[in-house]
Image 1 (tube, rainbow, N blue to C red):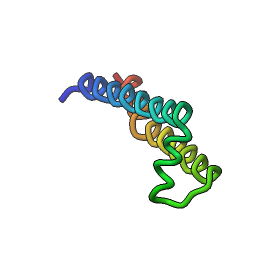
Image 2 (cartoon, one colour):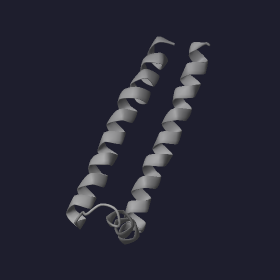
Image 3 (spheres, rainbow, N blue to C red):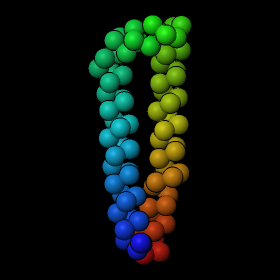
Length: 80
């Protein structure tokens, strides 16, 4: 496996993760009430808690993408 192959894989991982994050955001923005009702069938949450959980989840997901995909990709671009 070459550095170029790893770079290409990380770039695809970044694209896929960005699309998933954007999709998550759009679903919460566009269908907030529906998603809230669906989740509160199983878990007792008020709207503020629901929003905080999703906002925190998105923030954590962004940090993990940065740490595990963006940083290694930048390192490979610098050394390559």
